[in-house]
Length: 208
Image (cartoon, rainbow, N blue to C red):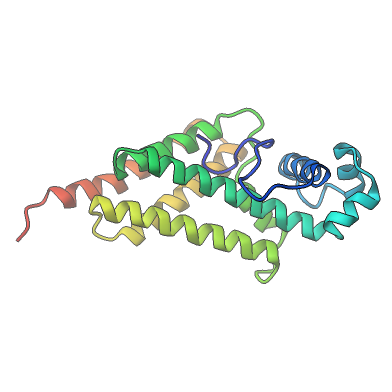
C-alpha cells in the first residue's frame, strides 16, 4: 500500500468523470509528478492525453484548474489508502508500523520522485495559492490522523509524536530521492521505533 505518492496511473475515488476529462487528469498525474508541474505545458498534456485543445479548455479552462484538481486527487488517493489501512489493521500500532513500512517501500519503488505534495509546495511558494492550500490541508489531515493513532496507543503527547513522524517521513521521502535511500529509510525506521516505544512504555506504566 503506497502512502504518499501513489502509482502515477492510480485514480483517486471521486465522482465519475467524462472519459476525455479523465484522460487529461490521468496524463497530468503522470507528467506533473515525473517532470514537475511548471515544466509540463498545456500542449504536451493535450497531445499525451489525445484530446483537442477545445476539449481541454472545455473541461479545465486553464492549467491552474488542472493543477489544483491533480493535487486534490492525490490527496484523496492518499487518504483512501490510509483509511483502508486503519480499517484493516488489528490495532493502532500495526497501522502505524504499516504506514512506516509503506513509506519505505515507496522510496524503493520504480519511478519514485519524492513527495508530490512537497514538490508542489516548492513550485508554488505563495501560501495563499490554491495548490498550497490543498497541501496545507493534506498535511493537517495527516498530523491529525497520526496523532489519533498515537493517542489510541497511549502516547503521552500524541501531537508531538505525530509531528515527529510526519517530519521523519518528509525527510525520508526527500532524502530517499535526492540522496541515500537506504540511510533515509533506516533513519525513518529509527525515529518511528522511538515514537512508538514512547507510547508502549507509557501504556505499560502502572496507574498511580
